[in-house]
Image 1: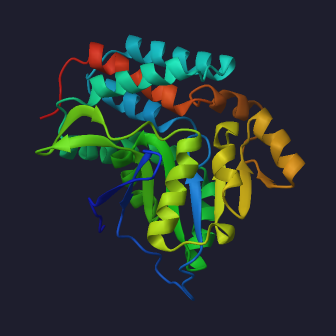
Image 2: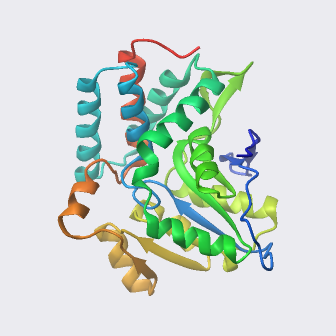
Length: 291
């Protein structure tokens, strides 16, 4: 399957930085391409059941990068963040520092290889078929489809490539000589940063945001949903569901009964914080480093 390692970094007038990576994949048939329209999909609990960084951590645990006890603690931290909805600036700063500790010294090729393996093992079975079909409809209509996630852009790119999507917007880590330096380029791709990144991408790609659509499960993505012409709440949390009803947005829920409650545990209302919690543990507890 064709793929690309191209990562584009852009900074706006306010100093906000976004990164996106194209997969070089296109739909098999495109009837009439619509260059001004695109769709943007959140990943965690929107495209996938649970948090991608959690499943990535589970894959690393199964490879003895750290212990299952560490993983259980990370899962509890995810649930705690979701229930308490702690999104303060200090917490985000901690998450960023933790991410820096995690990526330092890791080879980009190793992270991409592990991401591909772990996607096939743990993430692919948890892709929401209904959400994937929504994305495919945009592709069939000749539109581009991008994932937008707080996860590292390399992980997002792998998920997008595996799903046959256009590309991914994600958190960008600085790379020198093929290895992560331990510094992030800009901030975590979370909350308002997603809307800013999509706006930057629209300017680069010639998109008309009023003709674009966005899909998310979380009220944290209200800035993103408000930035496009068509907003869709997918498996929404309570706050987003209320907002969707007030704005008349479409709601799609692929969860049913007790299964929906069970799936909510490994997901989070604060993806950036979860990334920080997981990567902090990895930095402290990992048994070995790739490469």
